[in-house]
Amino acid sequence: MLKDEQIALLKDISASIAFDDRRAAVDELVMEGYLVKDGDLYELTAKGEMEVESHAALQGSRSL
Image (cartoon, rainbow, N blue to C red; front, side, top):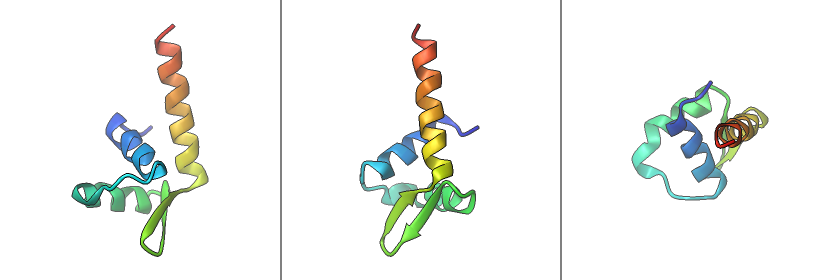
């Protein structure tokens, strides 16, 4: 399971927010299969999307 910081990073990339200061964390997510690099852009893989959705579901169940 990913840490909250990693989920936040996936969400930022999904929303196309700059992340230059977190390059090492991005590279780690690429190596783990959560992101792919397409030219200068990063995109969530199916694995990354599932993690973001799973995290959102967990956050929703905690607020009940």
